[in-house]
Amino acid sequence: MNSNFSTLNMRRDVFEEALLKNLTVVLFGLIINYINGTLLYTFFTNVNFQSDSRYILYMQLIINDNVMVSMMVNLHVLSYVCPNLNVSLCIVLLLICENTHKNTPLNLAAMSIERFIAICHPLQHPLICTVSWTYMLIACIWVVGAIPGFIKVIITFVFKPLSFFSSGRMCYPINIFQSVYNYNTYYATNILYLCFVWITLIYTYFRVVFSAKAATSDPVSSRKAQMTIRLHVVQLLLSMLSYIAPVLDTALTVLFPDFRSAVMFCNNIITNILPRLLSPLIYGLRDQKFKKHMKRSLLCRKTVMNVKSETKTTLGLIQRDKTS
Image (cartoon, rainbow, N blue to C red):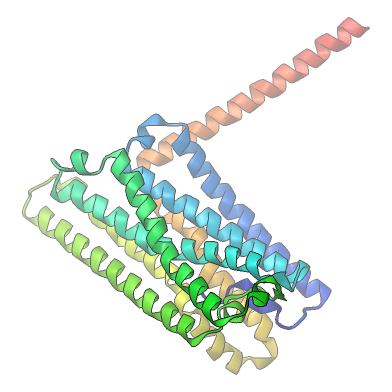
């Protein structure tokens, strides 16, 4: 992840500008968490989804995005409320952000592999893609995604005195992980992770295409799997916008030097927040089975809330009648 929202506070904004930025970020965060919360509610209220590796991996992606957006919103607000944050606390927050950021492409690769097995090896799919296997894979994704961040922390421990970790600084990566070794680690891991994910997506896509042409599986399912992997590619491209954010920042601030803060803020909204808003809409709402259950869950939830409200009203009237 690039230097996130905290970098925008390097110059102090006027009150109106700071208020508008914080309200915008918090509003986006609430909208994304509400949509994702609805998807999670549908998943946890339907047992069939909880035994399907495809939906388990998708919910992992949703939870990952929820954590990432929440951390980004907190960091942005903290950059105004508490500009000089304790370095140790800042490192924890940045590690969570970086871990979730790395998890996104890895999760997309895992979802593509699951679809590849379902279409190209349907007989082995129930044996390989079990619930326990899926949760072990999710654990591996979190561990692998956390490795670059912990390497940065180790390098920082080596090159910084212990007093640095108890000091207060503006909480953004460039200000905390200043070593050239950290820069090299950042670029090397990004290249390694993205190469692995792109190779996985391309391989699984063409294997599914060849499987459909050879008629070794259901053509309808094959076409759906092809579209699913294409959507994974779109999601990956959206998540990769954050990698080009520093380049866009540099180019646009050169063109519009008087609007540097506004340019960086809008750039971060487009490259970090909007992809997390579009991701569940692109994939989750396209799935007809999931969409049907989601509508049913929301209707049931609304009905239950209305029944509870009517019950409370009735009890209140009875209580009032008894009192009178």
